[in-house]
Length: 164
Image (tube, rainbow, N blue to C red; front, side, top):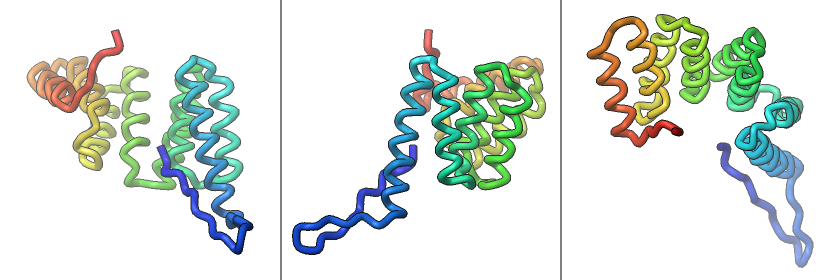
């Protein structure tokens, strides 16, 4: 999640917050709302909120990647992939976007593509347990059991737990 910018300055008793910071605070609030909607399964609301964020900050790679995830769970695969790839065009070093795209590709059964993308996510963030777990699944489905087990073990070491 993006850091909250809460900086202002005082002139006597009047507090003035520059417009850019007001926008940053409202974007942070929107991120919180989108995350809450996603957690409760209200994907349509999460999508709407992420679109609002993108209206305020169109080059926000995290928002594009988040939108990719929301579109994916709604079965809107073409739009989801486009959103993930847009995130990576905007920020080619964004591990979150690589992990999201890799998970999406793995879910589509595109395991070789997913492997490449997830390895890049791990290169960018070696502590990404979800990327390791998804890599393990992609490798396992390619019949590469030893490599898959090593990826799963690393995911567990980093704290990955299955949700069930």
